[in-house]
Length: 277
Image (cartoon, rainbow, N blue to C red):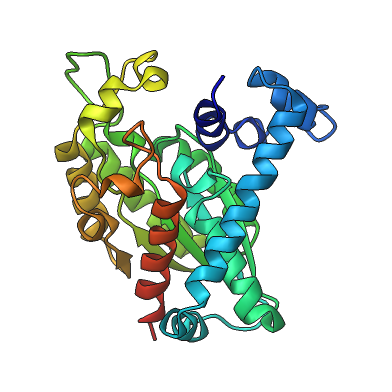
């Protein structure tokens, strides 16, 4: 297995998150995660550590720009605020924008004791989110950053007749998520629109094609519009990153972000969030 294939498995499959709901003591150690991916534990551990180190370096590179550091300073966060990043594989990635953001907060505002927890599972739709959001609500967060809905726009097979979640149901799900957070917490929310993909690369990718995964940017645009038209602040990643995003931002599957893509996402989130009063 090539280094590129190993990295794709770690960034996309993520057994440490997809199986996180199992009871404590289930024995799912790093060794178990590696076996589930068919990797020697040494390769799994070494590559995961390397990816996390690169994410930390990306945070440092962003903060080296005084303008970005100033944005982090201006984020409307108080001492000991609890932040949750909620989403799917774009957020659960070991190098995700949320990981980079967490490192930026630790470096720049460590004295404030701000925590950032990642609640994200690869492959989930907004319907899954209605189930899992209860855990987030119970944690009593001060902020929730939502990047959700990409998988709602997913289709299966070469001639699909529908998306996994119809856009009208996506709208109802997102409205319900907003309502639950509003009614059951005092948390502030920032919603991030799902970004576009490279449709041809998604269709041709060996890992995604195995399952018949397809995406159309017109379907993702519809989800982005639903998010954009909701109440409250929105970071419009779909518009900002382009359709499709620049090749440097995407892995060869045309769907998931490279480290450069996740770094760009972290920047856009910080820039949009810092404008709030």
